[in-house]
Amino acid sequence: MIPAVELAGVRKAFGTQLVLHNVSLRVGRGERVALLGESGSGKSTLLNLLAGLESPDAGTVRVLGHEMSALDADGRARVRREHIGFVFQAFHLLAHLSAVQNVAVPLLLAGERADIAQQRAAQRLASVGLGERLHALPRELSGGEQQRVALVRALVHEPELVLADEPTGNLDPSSAQRALEEIASTVDRCGAALVLVTHSEQAARIAQRRVRLLRHTLEEEPAAAPAAVARSTQP
Image 1 (spheres, rainbow, N blue to C red):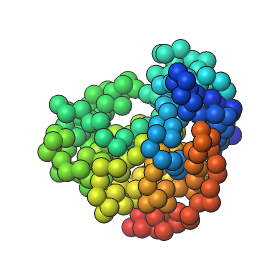
Image 2 (image 1 turned 60 degrees about the vertical axis):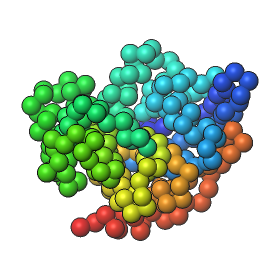
Image 3 (image 1 turned 180 degrees about the horizontal axis):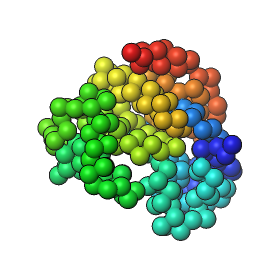
Image 4 (image 1 turned 135 degrees about the vertical axis):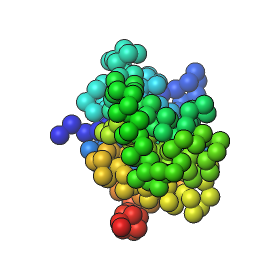
């Protein structure tokens, strides 16, 4: 089976500043991988390469069988729109749209009818306890509620790969743990691969594998068993 992510010999620099050197990584379908490293180590750059927002200076980046740098801008956008879900630290909810409208956006971009998109979005929000908050604007939601909306939006179109960039950085420890449990259980239900960029050991515990960016390259680390998180998400 074609892996969700395959990087080989990737190098990336910005001017004279080397960020990534000879980076290789393979993430299987349905696998959860935590990408750790200090601030400024290049984690977000690597995520941008996976999303096709940056191109490597050398090496190859394949996502779900697509070599991202071989695609034009429209092709990369299509891969992002149809196959990738994004979860961000800052949530990036559209301020003028309600929770249900925010979640419907990926479905509308994929060509879903507006009424069907709204219905699916409402069902997914209800499944994470936000059935009474469908029409609330982002400013009317708590940080934890905004994170759940952002998570549902990332997964509503059932992507094959989820890219999460410090998704719990703005949450208190209790809300962060609930969000991590929701991420783990939801990507498992969807069968999606997860690349979780974080500097948080708490967040890294939901991963099956851990890799660390150190001195511009990746090193594999032993992973803590994710079973404790998975058990806590069961009814």
